[in-house]
Length: 261
Length: 288
Ligand SMILES: Nc1ncnc2c1ncn2[C@@H]1O[C@H](COP(=O)(O)OP(=O)(O)O)[C@@H](O)[C@H]1O
Ligand SMILES: [Mg+2]
Image 1 (cartoon, each protein chain N blue to C red):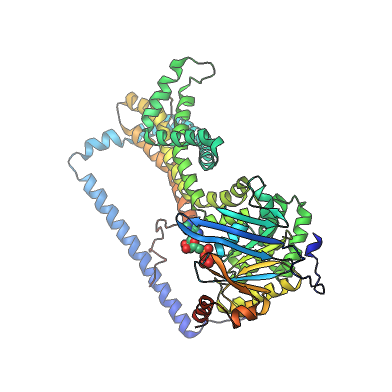
Image 2: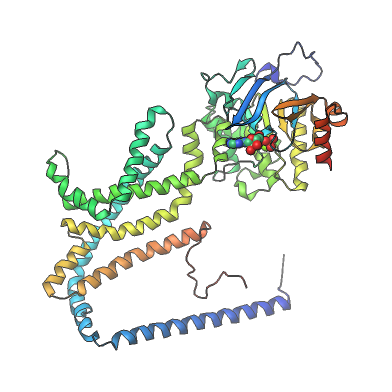
């Protein structure tokens, strides 16, 4: 574990002295001639929770997929812990192994038991001995409250439980940063709470997270910074109070009006 | 946890049981009636006595049975050996087609070309070309027995079909599964081996068994190269008795061989939610 990830709530660095853990600068991504990210920039510091909001199709998933190197950027730079991860000479698998990603549709492996979903990457990617991988997996399943379901198959679990397994699966390798893409959008309303309270608890342990979400209540409570994506860029950013309560930009106000109804 | 069905439920259950009994009775009666009509139509046709004498001679059937059964044993062995080789070659072909990168271009192109060619060629042509062409080359190490050449031809043709089945299975696994595996740091090959293939193979078991049924029949074609399988044995016996009954015997044996396979496929297919044959007597499972 790097020292940057230890919990240190008492120490508040002035932002200028603390180099960002994750730095996205001028990233461009187009599909055909549809430009989705148009020179987007974003910094995430250690232990910060950055929430991405924006209309459907505004590029939140695309941005997270670019950071996890699931998409190649067309231009710009993404740095993780000071290293340019968009450099094609870098081993992308090793980079992905340092980033935890959780998807809207959980994407658990249906042919593997919960425990094997969680131990797969440690065994194959991190070379953890099987016994150790098992112990680590049980510990992290305990954290998400699902140790009792270790032997179940994904389709035997509720949506909320599946998403918590997916979070455990991403968490077990102790990633430097977690990317969460609308992780509650596929859930029944009464299951949203259990996943959001897990994320709140993860924040309290100092985990760095980038969260795309439509849950404004969650953003208000947990975000250190809220970024509103519009036209391929961060159109407005600030604390939840600034962006969600007193947006400066007309587009932000319009978006918030629309989703709060 | 003691639950006694309510009176209403008992009454419903009794009604369903009586309906089920009635359905079974109807199925039995209609089946018997249909068979009776068919048999009657056949036996009352003017040519029936002659057909019966030359195709359904019980004596000839008994006499020719051992030779044909021995031939069938060859079919079974050819089928077993080819099935294993086919699965291996087909999987290699399917995987070759998923390789990315310029280094693998020739491998990809070869695999694609192979599948295109052997899916288009009639099996009987492949058998003739391999069976009579390969030995003509007089190469060292090339088998010359009809059985080996016939097996080779079966493997060449069926691998192309089964490779496409595997490829379809691989493509049916949603890309989000690969994205999840890659996001954990798995390499492309690891994602294929541990995430995609296990799901793909499970999905293609029913169509694979289907191909196995077809293979068991087509194994009879190696007789054209002179291998003494069930078909060739029947041919010999037919000539000996100047009677066609041995062909009927061989046909019955092939059907007896494939029926268990077909039923097994149905069971697997139904279990994996694949729409299979309705084999229940009363056509069960339908909504009221
Ligand atoms: N693989 C792709 N191919 C083509 N277009 C894509 C692809 N992925 C995303 N897009 C397009 O990019 C835009 C942004 O999508 P996305 O990042 O999913 O937005 P969000 O997550 O904010 O809803 C959408 O218009 C979408 O149709
Ligand atoms: Mg999205």
